[in-house]
Amino acid sequence: MTESQRPSGEYPMYPSYGNGDAAYPPPPAHQPAQPISTGPGTTVWPGSGGAGHSGGDHYGGFGQGLPQPAPQPSGHGRRARRPVALLAAVAVAAAVVGGITATAVGQFAGTGSSGTDSGSVVSGTTVSQSSTGTVAGVAKAVSPTIVEIGATSTAGESTGSGVIITSGGEIITNNHVIAGASSIKVTLSTGRTYTAKVVGTDADKDLALIDLEGASGLKTATLGDSSGIKVGDQVVAIGSPEGLTGTVTSGIVSALNRDVTVAKDSESGQEQGQQGGGSDWPFEFGGRQFNGDTGNSTTTYKAIQTDASLNPGNSGGALINMNGEIIGINSAMYSASSSGGSSSFGAGSVGLGFAIPVNTLKADLDTLRDGNSS
Image (cartoon, rainbow, N blue to C red; front, side, top):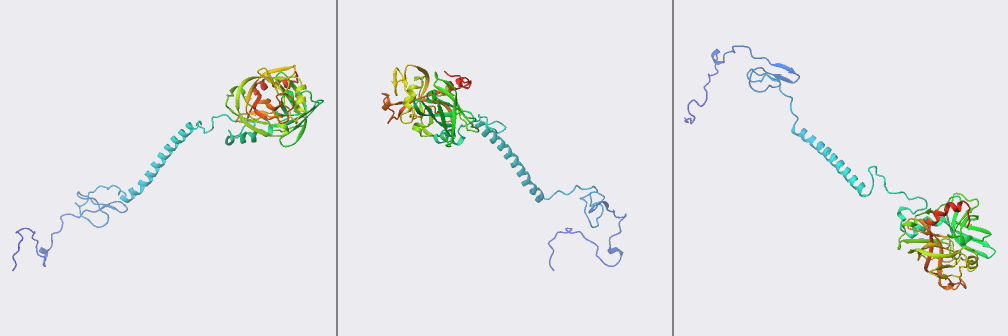
């Protein structure tokens, strides 16, 4: 026999299962507890002890006897909702950051909360935003508003330029271009020609207003403000020197408020105009006469000096800033070869040109339209 190593009484002793009543446990003193139905799939056992169970038979003492809380979702279900919450949080953060960024950009760009530009709108023949500051952009925008003027008088023919200021055909030019003319022919940049009549003249300011007969729908120039001009500002000149329509030159403002003296009558200008097809108008500056004799009847005005190339025929044309606005009406130029007044043949620009400030024109425009002549 093998000796048992277990201490005595380690295992309980049970009666043997044999035949007879003594071999079975006695019957219970009361009926077993019955389950309480609380709902489909849930069974609660009365008594004290563990939680209720679903299905199967249990005895009292093993059930809690109280309804149990609804089962919690598994960990997998909770994890499934986290990405949705995370995405919502990210979307909110992105919206906040986007709003702040848009506000900052709007403030930096000078825009209001509506996103519209607070800057002023350029009108008329001003240059498009992409072309602002370029000679090519100015020329493209303004050239259609500059015309060639041919004036015929008893003294001969002269050629000058003019600027369209109304769609119906009002044109500003120099008085000396049309003074004494018996007929005036105007050629547009498109090549179309019109007959023009004189509306008003101001010999003291060397300005004249003419009107095309039967014209409509013309492109007009924008009159700027000459009070803000500074020496060194870039400018463009457009005119018809020697009959070459639509010639574009550029330069800078060389000086301001030059006292330029020109002839008030037509004799000197028309005589010079016969030669070379130009209008090499004589003028006086600093007590000296240039391009011929100014005669006895003269007038003096404050002029803008420019080194943009001006030649005979540029008179009455436009001096333009880089926004495409008219800032002056070209009126005189110095020609070294004709300073003695003998001939305009071979004359050329030496960078001394003068223009009547546009503010002088604007102040005189109503008087010209009233048909007054002086």
